Amino acid sequence: MSRPDDICYIAPTDPDRVDDVERQLLGACLWSDQHDTSGFDEAAEVVAPDDFGVHAHRVVFRAMLELRATNAPVNAVTIFGRLRATGAASELGPEPGVWIGDTVTLQGSDLNARYYANQVREASRKRRLKRAIAEMSAVAARSPRPAADVLADCEQILFDAGDVDGAGTQCSASALVSEALDHIDRVASGLEPGGLPTGYADLDAITGGLVPGEVTVLAARPSTGKTALALGIATNATRGGAPALFVSLEMGRRSIMQRILSMRSGVRLDPIKRGTLNSDQAGRVDAAARAFAKEPFFLEEATPMSAARLAAIVRRGVRRHGLKLVVVDYLQLMEPEDTKAPKVHQIGLLSRRLKELARSCAVPIVVLAQLNRACEDRPDGKPRLSDLRDSGEIEQDADVCILLSRQRGQQDANDVWLIDADVAKSRNGATGEVTLAYRRPVVRFENAAVGC
Ligand SMILES: Nc1ncnc2c1ncn2[C@@H]1O[C@H](COP(=O)(O)OP(=O)(O)OP(=O)(O)O)[C@@H](O)[C@H]1O
Image (tube, rainbow, N blue to C red; front, side):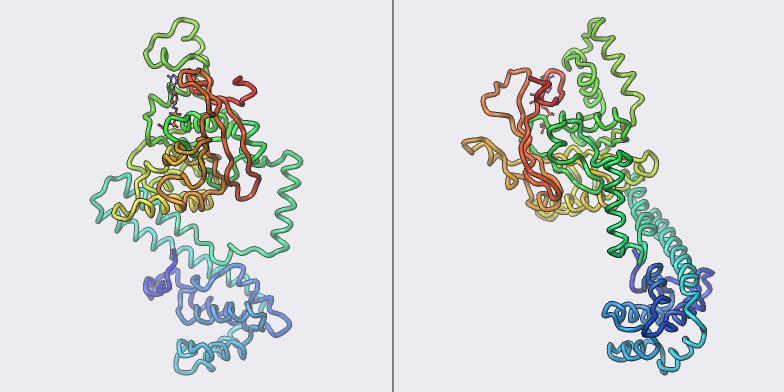
């Protein structure tokens, strides 16, 4: 992340200082007159104030942005007035008026604004990268922590260095409209999928699938089947070719694999666990295993799992495997950033971090969460959003909240449980309830029409 005091980090001999080019860029911007601010507008698409290495240049460019925000012209007179009004003129030295005059005469037209802006931006990125590398060596040198944590911190530093994209995060209304219409066309023509299907048709009909950048919370009381449904969603995605990462903080890889083989083969979990398969079952498990081995499914079971560590893992997964889905089982088992903070704040911060991660990596994240006991005391036994254990912020940060509960009257011993999935919150879509069938002996969720 760039800092206001970036200038302190730039050595006078740094080859990535481009002081003259920066000043020529400002000259090109100031060339614009009342009727034509195209030079400045072009530059503002490419650079932000923090991209300038020289403090005075930043001050001037920031003042230009402030003027443009009020639709005022950007020229030598208006800038000088603005700097005087804000008390920033002294930052240009003892004679700010002369400084601005000299800057304008450096450049005879605004035609080169974009050319100079690209050079300023490039130099700024290189400096930022070098700072990141220095910061990473400092982290590695001083930290007595495990290598995996140091790596996670370094990846975060590197990501921040590459992520800051100056002025490039803003988009005009016309560009936004054309992008939105293009997206509609592409979805309609099947060129671009809508949300990633969960594989549960009724659920997808309400939510429209899992949307990149969005967080879906799947919450229930313990032993309702959250993990089974989440594994179903992840493996439905990978069966369709979409790479998925399943982060299991509760169950080890052997248990997860036994469940997947049971779900996929239709062979009961118990004989798979005990190793008591007959030849027919062994054949089915083998066929399921061979098919599954070719799918882009990735399991992460490392604990403790902090938000920073998860972010590093997900970013790497997106880069290397093109992840299209991340599932975290479950939120309350993640490691809090501040162990001394009250539980509510710890969980709130974790859920915010997941939202930031989903947005920055443009992947959907499904996170499992525990509900408190309140629903057990209600006559209908139905969970509500307020039952999300430990923090109301989970509900705020989530784009979609699905509350699972076993329908009343289902016996514990039934092979199939009917599970209500209440889409209680959907930021960009509909809410409503669907029923799924949980076929327990093979730990598999199915569309209710299939399961019954
Ligand atoms: N071998 C099995 N045979 C029958 N049912 C099973 C078997 N293994 C698990 N189950 C059922 O699955 C349920 C647990 O499913 P799952 O672990 O997906 O739930 P969960 O909501 O994730 O639970 P938790 O919050 O405790 O992790 C149990 O209540 C049980 O009914």
